[in-house]
Length: 76
Image (cartoon, rainbow, N blue to C red; front, side):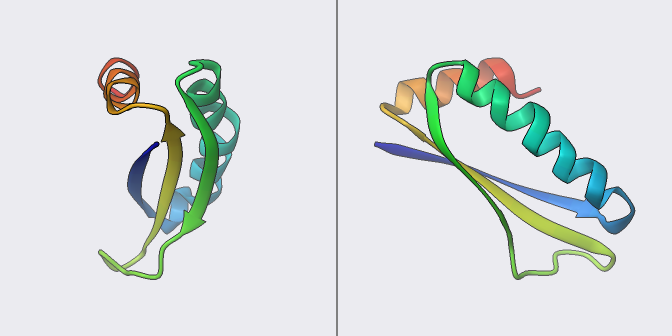
């Protein structure tokens, strides 16, 4: 099993829109690919920049190839 973890740093003014995008678009598209499963969406306890919040989305892939293929062909 491979964990594909992506961190996001979002300005507080976009926080609610971002969380909706992750829940309604990002995670469903990842699961629909058939290559990723078991999503986790969590807030991070770090402050990279003032007025920003940080999040991580983790998904499981059966192989590194599946994770790389989804990452390279889906995330733009």
